[in-house]
Image (cartoon, rainbow, N blue to C red):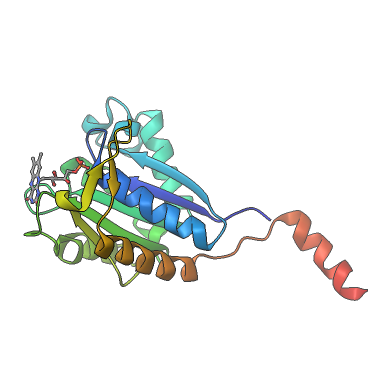
Length: 199
Ligand SMILES: Cc1cc2nc3c(=O)[nH]c(=O)nc-3n(C[C@H](O)[C@H](O)[C@H](O)COP(=O)(O)O)c2cc1C
């Protein structure tokens, strides 16, 4: 049986990134609940030339692969830093290349980080409506963390989520997303099953 593929896409423009750490922490929580194949991308993975592309055919190959990955994923975890009260411009630029029909009904969990708590509801006022446009199935618990909710990890990852309230919200969002992740059945198993059932 192939595992459901979860794509994490994060709008961070540099690494280390708290936003990426938060989105990956949610991915890890999901992985503790259901066996999944996790792939993680951020804006740096989209490659040079991505920012000036105006049509999908102009995209550099790495960016095109991210969009293909998002469209074909079984579920998404989306994250971004808050810039001036909303998601980053390049985050939206990548989302703008997604075929509007390809996210309909797709389970999506939302995360964001900001400098403080002032823009905590941007997950509800900016991110959720964006995925509403796509008719995606966003889970009820969105996770916002501020800089104070992280501790320096001392390695190349840079940060670790340490706030107990954020960890609890991550667990809640992971629980909700896990329930929506479709189970995949591989071809071999689909063929073998009726034979076993007949014995
Ligand atoms: C251009 C810019 C604008 C920002 N605007 C906001 C903002 O409106 N509200 C906020 O809470 N933090 C704001 N921040 C702070 C970042 O959201 C915060 O440091 C975030 O955790 C960075 O995430 P990253 O480590 O993934 O880049 C801004 C930072 C930059 C560079």
